[in-house]
Image 1 (cartoon, rainbow, N blue to C red):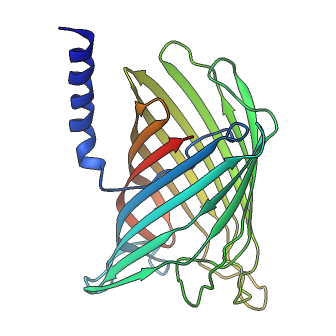
Image 2 (image 1 turned 45 degrees about the vertical axis):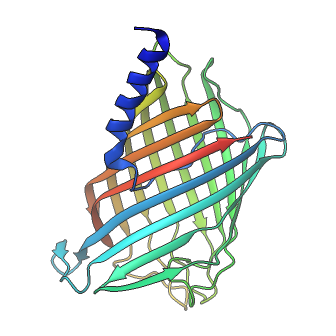
Length: 280
């Protein structure tokens, strides 16, 4: 067979493998490093999951929700990014949320999230490095009109350790701490810590990867700035994903995320996602 025919067969195989995931969602930030100077990035994410369990603190165990309290949630996230220089990038996100509960569907939008990312020591595929990331989130929508918006300003402090490619493999370690301020209702939803281990494998024009992620949500504070009991939670999840470089500057990403251990809040059995990323 000719090289073009082989590439076509491989591409069709990838499409078949991705089909079960194309309509579902959840991913972390698409890149460890900021954009290059004057580079523009357009990004669209679709996310889907169903909430079927809630943690019962009196029994210290998960409890199935009744059918009228189960929720189906979807998120659509268009995003635009621009590289100020090779270390600093700015992003604008325009999330749209939809939720179905007890056969009633609601849609929430008009929130804008502005974010910056700065890398002190950018990593690359040719050398091992440490990438320090700082970000600020400025929501513009009140929690009264959008229950998905916590209405607070978040400061994100992160560190990414990235190895160079060794053969077809590459390893990433990422940790971040989000400092959450009081929102428009004078309520602090609590800070959050995350640590993530990612292993990549290069196969043809795609990257296969697995992720293990731990998330810890610290106790919330009420209107009187007192800590709220039973508001601390944690979650350990595993993910499997595929990144397919369709064209030179066009990437398709897909992932399924499954919780392994969790305590506190609500719980989904799995979360699906797909992203489309285009660089200009």
